[in-house]
Amino acid sequence: MEHYDLIVIGGGPSGYAGAMRAIDFGKKVLLIEKKRIGGAGIYNGVLTSKTLWEQSLKIASIRELIPDYKPKFEDVSRTVNEAVFERKTQMTVHLQLLQKQSKRLFFYEKGVAFLKDKHTVQITKEDGTVKLASADNILLATGSRPRTPANINVDEQTIVTSDGIKNFTEFPKSMVVLGAGVIGCEFATIFSGFGTTKVSLIDKADRILPFEDEDIADVIKNSLEDNNARLHQGASLKRMEIVNGRVEYELEYKDGKTEVLTVDKALISIGRIANVENIGLEDVGVKLNSRGSIWDDDTQTNISNIYVAGDVTTEVALVNVGEREARHAVVRMFGPTIKPLTYQNISSIMFLNPEVAAVGMNEQECNAKGIAHKVVKLDFTTNARAIAMRKTKGFFKIIVTNDNGMRILGMRVVGEHASSAIQAVAYLIHTNQGIRELADMMHPHPSIIEGVQECLRMLLHKSIYKPYVFKDRLKCYVCESGVCTPVESLV
Image (spheres, rainbow, N blue to C red):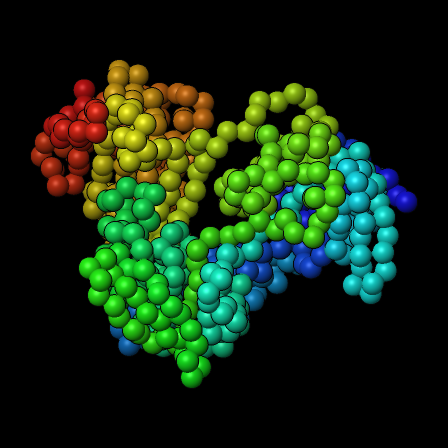
């Protein structure tokens, strides 16, 4: 039985990152993956959906110039497959070359892993052969899968999760999305953007994206409706079934009214479930939490030499978070003592239209925690780059403490290139710095990030456009005890 310093179970983004970090410490690593290197991050998740999103935006731009333009499904599908092939090939070739290195630190096995004890893993190969391996440490990175309702027959052909999108052979003429969180809204954005699918979105809450501020949700709602999407707001799904090859669903609204509708396809987007079954957790005594995922204390499970990272914790189901958790776990195993991970100021992107970038707290979080704060908002119509692109839908919003220090609590950007505008502010939050240095830097022109600079200048009472002149485009207000008061300047 071969012995390793680390065995990683799961070859998705988290497991891959953890294995690579262990090599940095000169450790002997075995990576085990039962299906395909890259996991859902490549094949059914981030890469495929974001490639679809990019294609949808391009096609939406073409349709602005040529309203009757009809995209070809096979062209879009081919582009997605090319992206998957490119990323898969990179990762696979990288692993193959690593295994040929003279130091022989990295080893890979394709098969199903099962914990026999806290140091031993059984690997069952595709041909049924079984082998054992042992290690000082084990990293669990088994990922997650889409959650499905017990009363709906999800066949991944007509009623699908994100895993079943790849089974489409043409653009559906009509489609309903169940779930108005980020992923549900992303897929509604994608398919409505192609201009060939009439999209409906079932939202049990009073508004989409309920975890974000209302001004953000309103922009996305209006954009979806501009693309002829229909929002079933305040609606509960009573049933959904396949009838004569199509999807029939029944809704009940808060006023008691019911409605029966029929569409070509349905997409279920109600979250994900951790992959914790059939890997031997019970035999070893690895504890689960109340969410049904693996319990951890700063990536360490209740078994001291077994660590966990990525979606299987369901802490925050993002690729960047999973990779960071895995790398952190490996440093805890083999490196110097480090500070615990913090999840307070994660930078994230919502691939909507327009896109939304976020870091830190939003207004409703500040209000819920009773934090007095100042807010500045700057409309995209004032930004030269947005004007040049003819993409002026959106705004910048920065939230700071209501004191002279004006420490940044959070930021939201809604609009074109939003993702390029948040990292400098994320760094200020991470290092607990103030705003003056960033406000005084020479930012490139014309650029979207100039909007961040102008927001900071507004806070310092030295903006180029004055909020007391452009009251509809520059907004300043102070919020205390849940009451927000507009002011002309924030001195």
